[in-house]
Length: 271
Image (cartoon, rainbow, N blue to C red):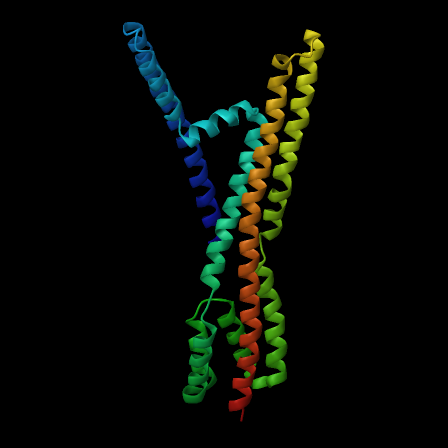
């Protein structure tokens, strides 16, 4: 199920990127046509200079954010920028999968404890097992594991809860190392593009034999753009990463607190 969610997320993001690029290209054609119309109007009405200026301003304002983003993406060297974009896509895919998984794992522990206590009081351990089996989330799984060891004594129940709790914590933290990798690698790819851009600028200076702004501007712009995009990707993924960590910490605290209350309930009704 996790792999399916991650695959669908990645596929959706790739489709979005392709469709956005296509739409941006279509918008380029529309803007070009609009520019041609504005040029015709200026030729026909030479005296209306103020009107022509207004039309030109409208053409500039017609560029959307995604259009500007696309132009800067191409200007920053598509090869390096593509790697940064892939880091963002795969990182977001893992983040979305983790958020969905953690949200599905969230349980109202107080309500579950009340149900388990009522089941133990009225129907015994088997009834409590059914309650835990019908409830999703790691807390219910821990309770079920503890109830399975109920006949061996409370000490065995505690050992079982501690051992199984460690396993569930590992599942909750699964994928975080990959998110950390993408957070670290995105700026590195940007810095690599920066170095390549500076090398390109110096190559142009060597070829031309002149240090004019026009010669070095292209390489320096590419260097700065790759760094900016790499840092933006790292910032976005870092926000998601911290949110996921907070969710994991909340679930772990809920597991620990509810386990203590669960042991107290079993001790209360232990014969």
